[in-house]
Amino acid sequence: MWWPSPREDGLHSLIDRDERPNAWLKAVYSPGVALITQMEDGPAKGALTSSISSSGVIIELLRHLAPEPGERVLEFGTGTGYTTALLATRTGPGSVVSIEIDTVTADRARQNLDGLGLDVHVITGDGELGHPAGGPYDRIVATASVREIPQPWLDQLRPGGVLLAPLDSPFGCDLLVRLTGAGGGSARGEFVAKVDFMRFRGQREPRPYAELGWPENASVEPWQELRVEVGPHRQQIIDSALLRPAARSRAESSAP
Ligand SMILES: C[S@@+](CC[C@H](N)C(=O)[O-])C[C@H]1O[C@@H](n2cnc3c(N)ncnc32)[C@H](O)[C@@H]1O
Image 1 (cartoon, rainbow, N blue to C red):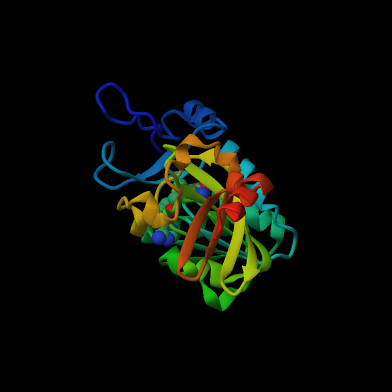
Image 2 (cartoon, rainbow, N blue to C red):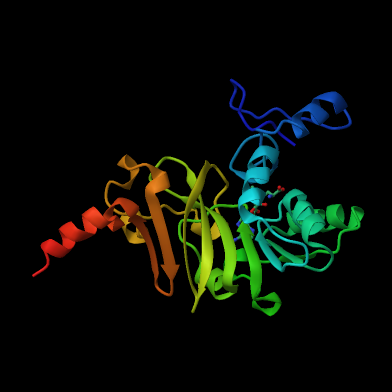
């Protein structure tokens, strides 16, 4: 693996477990670091395409997801299989489906999980489509970020189930959104943390925030005040200040 911040020469330092076992262990057990496990364009330079998520962030994410033993979980972005292993240990055999788009990464994750004796279904494919055959799911979680929540995720979430995903935001970071399934392929919720994840492959291209349902000047409001509603053909981020009684009565009084 490689250290995430580049050196002065722009390259990332390789941390080889065989050559530097102590540095490797120290890096793996640093809670605030996401270590690079794959680069698109060469061994030490280029786009970072897979990493093992930072354990501190994953613990925070799992705290908000709060899966219970026996619940059906769908995960996107298997990566090394680290988060998948934690999920499977919590929910039990046969309850986690995890989708990874990169063939080499998915194969390695399968080996890692098999090596731990965990019964997990790892699928090589595009997570944006979900996996309808295994649903509906009690918990859905992504460890790569999206600009727009894909509709198949909402269709495969059971009413009352929880969906957690990093959503690109105008705040200069991703915001972790926690949504509760409301039936009919819709869900609503709020943001619970500032995070930074790799983007889903199919959503790397930037898009105007207004097109993605963000209110104008969203980034000047505290992000904790925003509410999120998603459903067929819409993603809407709403400033909750506008929902407060004073704001509502202003809107009502200006109604014709
Ligand atoms: C930050 S890594 C996930 C790390 C993982 N949580 C771990 O702890 O090892 C993000 C992963 O998402 C994968 N990914 C990107 N786009 C995807 C897509 N459309 N469907 C499924 N996986 C995708 C990448 O290949 C990468 O392995």
